Amino acid sequence: MTADSSAPTSSVVLPTVRQRRHGMLLILVLAVAIFCWKLGSTGLVDETPPLFAASGRAMAETGDWLTPRVNGLPRFDKPPLVYWLMGLGYVLPAGSVWDPLGTWAARLPSALASVLTMLALGDTLLRYPVRGDSFPRRTAIAASLAFGLSPLVLIWSRTAVSDSLLTGMLALSLLCQWRCYASGSGRRWWLAWIVLAFAVLTKGPVAVVLTGITLVLFALIRRDLSGLWTSLRPLQGLVITGLISLPWYVAELLVEGQPFWDSFFGYHNLQRLTSVVNDHLQPWWFFGPVLVVASFPFTPLLVFGLGRVIADFAGGASLRRIPVRDSLGHFAGCWLLAVFLLFTAAATKLPSYWLPATPAAALLIALTALPPSLQQRKSLWIAWCSTALCTVILSSGLLASPLWIPLIQDPEMPTLPAELLASGLVIRAAVCFVVAVLVGTRSFWGAVPGRLLAWQGPMVLFQLIALVPMIQLGDRVRQLPVRQVAQQVVAQRRPGEPLAMVGVLKPSLHFYTDQVVLYEGQSKSAFVNLADRLSREQRQGFQGLPRTEVDASPSVLVVINQGTAAKQHWQGLKPQKLGSAGIYELWRLDRSRLEQRAADLRKEGVDLTWTRPRPERY
Image 1 (cartoon, one colour):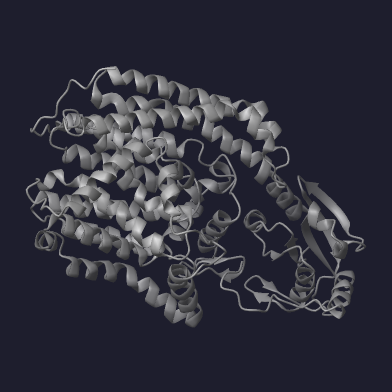
Image 2 (cartoon, helix red, strand yellow):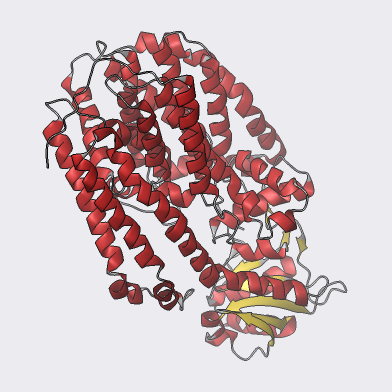
């Protein structure tokens, strides 16, 4: 193995207009292939995506585009932009033909946001190439792929939630901020603040907080607060952001009142920051391992690049002598650190919180892969060798899959190990990473600019021929039974007959039946809750009526999993079994028997719990 023969130059190589167009076209093709290939071929994954999808569809069906609702209740957890975009998909005609599972419309906002992020990263590096980069088009494509091939991005870009949309809007806004500063002209300074408003309408004030932390850190590392302030005009910009984003919040507060304030601002923002919700308790160092996984196997390059940024920040020397156009790496480092600092400080921690950092990580990876200076060459070789080692470990683990796949035990997917082994998909994935190791290490003897792309090519193939089929297999094993039992519900349900699901709670049952579903767990309290709710609960689309009322249904449809059905308090009810699918059974229960059993349980001291206030219900 020989040292790099190419040394960095001080000149800036500007791609021609034709080269930029060809580069952007290639990035677009790759992005569409990675994020949109077979996007609607699988059903929604419980539990959160069906809640988003059902809310978007409800807007399209009811014409109420102000308040998101799911299963007859307001859904205050997120602002409306993601629901609006999903709803627009459900408004399109002939949805049952082009989107039979309802997942194209639900997932397209996430996929398109990631496509736009890849394009924005590529366009930034094509228009503002780094000094000494002789092949800016390769760097632009490599940076785009470093984002698109992140394991977190691959998963969440195909998931019907708001995280990828926030990541895309925040990335577009921050890249516009840096480009405005780097251009030195201050032109179109307002564009970044308009896009930031869309981020605020996607997930709330966290977008403004992350932007503020990023810009403050960047101003400190550049020692140029006045230059940033002059270029970006933050006061006027925040006014623009507020004028676009705040009207919905004000309207929702006027219409829904205190429940909206308590749920959105109190629970989903302030409480998530200051206390643990939904049992998402994680140690303070949680985002360290997440950083490693999110950029794997290129994490060593990311750590090397981030280390340089931190060293420059801690060194105390002014970096103003570095041309502004060459400050993208420092900006990306500040962007990543902003995400790390904010969510490390937050009490509630989830892997998806790291997504807004993935575009910054991609920039650091691609810029680190450029030809190094003589002082940095040895350290960068260590980073490249570590990347090769990470890829070898990953491919070895996949090749050893016959040893560990049988250990997977999931009661909802009992046949998964056998089907996964029989499919050969894990071995196919291993082959892709073996090829990546071979091609990537072979590039050690070749031209440095193509090294990262050589590694990424087989990984794109992995996404298309291994990961997507794995997702389809998982859908067939885990989610297909829910869709099948939903079809049985639609076929068997009598007019006015209530529908309940107990044991394993799947919001996708509500989505696929388009009926209000009463969800309860496995406990004895859940049993008495269900009997009481059938008589008393009121929500949009469902009016609980005592069994003795004239209009009340004498029976209830219950979707129950086999484990719950085996519990003692569900025995002896003499249900009419109407069908089954996977681990689920469809029962028709006489409400009189249900109520009698509930009365007996209450005499034993079992309490009702469904009337107690809960911050999240569906």
